[in-house]
Image (cartoon, rainbow, N blue to C red; front, side, top):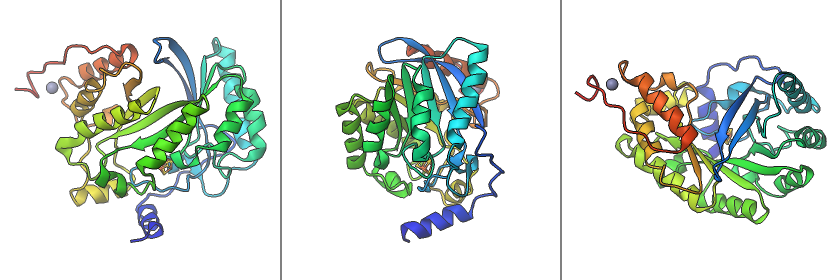
Amino acid sequence: MSGSDTDRRIRGLRTPKPAVNPWKAHGSIVEEERRPDGRIEFALTVFLAGAECPFTCSFCDLWRWTIDGPTPPGAVTQQVSDVLREVQAGSPRPDRLKLYNASNFFDRRAVPAVDVPAIAELAAPFAGVTVESHANTVGTLALDFAQRIPGRLEVAVGLETIHPTAAAQLNKRLDLAQFDRAAHFLSDNQMDLRVFVLLGAPYVPAEEAVEWAVRTVEYAAQRGASFASIIPVRGGNGEMERLQSLGHFAPPTLRQLEAALDGCLHLTHTVVTADLWDLHRLPTCASCGEARIGRLRRQNASGIAEPRVDCSVCEA
Ligand code: SF4
Ligand SMILES: [Zn+2]
């Protein structure tokens, strides 16, 4: 099956897209985040609405936050400007601005060229700025944006998994050589690399899910990633349910997420965290689930391993 046939199949299994207003960010959050040197930063993440990503990864559900056509010129600038006005009215300015546009920041359909100078101006007061991009679109446009801002640019890239079979099945059109090139380009040009890693990628056997998540984080760390976020794959986009019915996907559990994070805490130059968004959807035990989530939250903040949670119900 060709790439475009795969795209059509994945898209055909989706539920209808909710209505998205490209002139209004669909959320923002200020969080404390640890950096590799041990500093704690306040990071403001703005979840931007805009054009859909041209890739159609099997596990992705970010398309829900996108519109069908290109992002209208001026819309991203207005979204960022409105959120900054609200945030600055209520609290001290965060150290870092994260602009997550559910696609690739350097795709000019998603972030029109005309917006780039204005976004750079809005980002100027921040010591660090993070944007997201497919590894294939890390290049001169990243360098151009980095040179427009006084702070340091960090680019968040989905490495997802280095399991060879699973990586080939993600429909992400990414191979490790391309990732390595992007990592080198960023470090050669004084930009930071943040990485997204999947726990429970389809086609990774469930009993190997933890091992491959840890190996993938280690791979990114060896290539200079300053930050790695382990994201448990969630169902709900249609394609994941199809893969689950064929035995190619098993939703990861909270226990696996704990084991994956525990397995990465030996890394000293890369901050590794477990993604806690929507965690209550993961299969877990009613008796110890909250204690396990609390432990993950503390380990994300400190980077220090805590004793495992004992449970007389699920470990009996
Ligand atoms: S590249 Fe990222 S945003 Fe695009 S489809 Fe894949 S996971 Fe989703
Ligand atoms: Zn339990």
